[in-house]
Length: 41
Image (cartoon, rainbow, N blue to C red):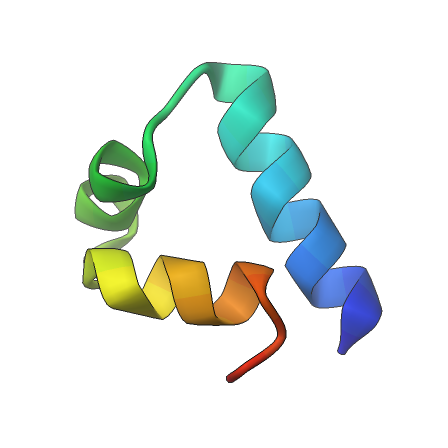
């Protein structure tokens, strides 16, 4: 799971997206993005 959370954050930062904007693009909630990035999902 570490690989996924690292890639999610890497791609988000690479694109210059906030967690909220990234979540909107994926059809997720901001808390889902945060959970994946922190390994809680």
